[in-house]
Image (cartoon, rainbow, N blue to C red; front, side, top):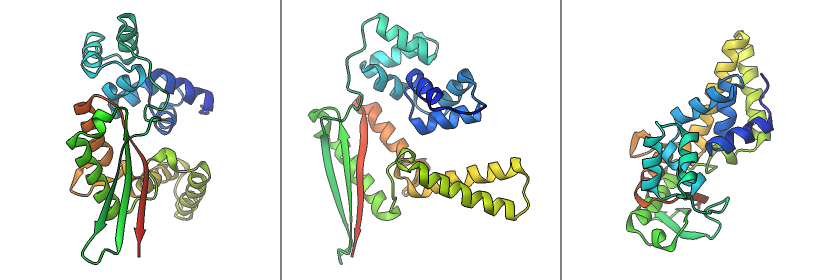
Length: 235
């Protein structure tokens, strides 16, 4: 079944997941909306998505999620029925609270990494753990040199170009269509894992992705955290 932009938007509205994950979920589930929701719930933090969608306090979000039997949509309804939701901006970091962290590498100072880390409140921006997270992200950028913040930042044109290259490589090896599609998907995921900051493995512990570090801090602070910009500047 063909995945349409409208289906992606519908799924995003129901789950508050990113566009790339919604598209992936629909493709994996052959366009079945309910299966796509299950796919997303297994691969992303439901509590964080509930918090971002409703604006409810983290404790209330957890309570609603448990009372709803860990059903995302029922939890949203429960939060809204009880008036726990708060108006939030489409982009919770539009106010640009946060910090810019700079890391200069080595005594020779030939490389610098910059990370803009945004949050919702000035209180969170001044939190020491928030500052430590920004520093860890700057270290990651200096060490691994990502080109994008997330998969969503990779243009459709770039993805199409890569897909064509990977498909030609698979075809040249005489792979069947089904196997070729899996190879292309695997190589795309490898590209994201190498070039996208949030998808990279944390260089201090490869059992974690960078996005996991951010999710852990979101749980502590109880508000959204967003990496807006990254830069590596090398002499």
